[in-house]
Length: 348
Image 1 (tube, rainbow, N blue to C red):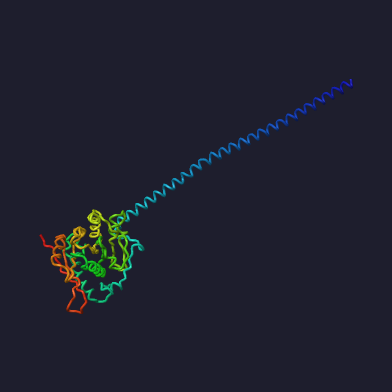
Image 2: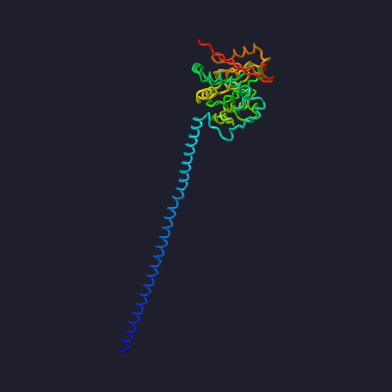
């Protein structure tokens, strides 16, 4: 009996031990399953996080170019607006908006004085007095009662019947003399595009000018040059061109002269033109100006040439004459005389 009980107890103990082992094994398996599940969840979470991160980064990469594009478009809009503003400013200030460096001429005034030109000093030289007398009639025609009946009265062409009679010398002296006025400014235009001589006379280097303006799509201010004579501006003839006659007769030239005439109430424009006889450009320019100064050389110019020259001018112009290289007998020999005989157009 005892052995049977002991055997039963042993069997029960063995079964209990087996059950305990099975429970422990089951517990270990459950722990392993839980750990595996946790790893899977963690891996899933990591993958999900990675996907989310990738998904969130992708739009960022896409949005960045959009931001750049947006910025670029904004820059383009601002640039376009600035360009339009500059264009508007150029249009509104097409006559006077020159660069202080590129659009400046330094005139050697001492050199001009030594060559017998009008001076800008207070010295009372004979040539200064002569041109004071000449310019008074021109200024009276330009701004006096006659100006109301004379188109473009402040546009003065200086010409001659034939070459080498002193028209450029006269044009430069008139410009220097008028620049000395307290309430007037002067623009000297070299329109003798076939044989320009204004810059050479002033001892200045050639630069772009009138012909270039008529050929290029640039504001006129680019071709107007300031000088060290405060109230004097220059427009050189510029590049030569085989269609100079057509360019001077163009609508652009007509509009430019009209702007010269009306934009500045204190402005005198002196145009050094080619000789009248045999040159088509002079006849065209004569249609723009309100006054003409015809230069004749004493002892050389023929009366028939002068009469022929006047006939080619606009009959509505005020025409005056300057006798160049006229030696006065009442003073020291060697002085040149400049005499202006104003001629008002007949009223209809």
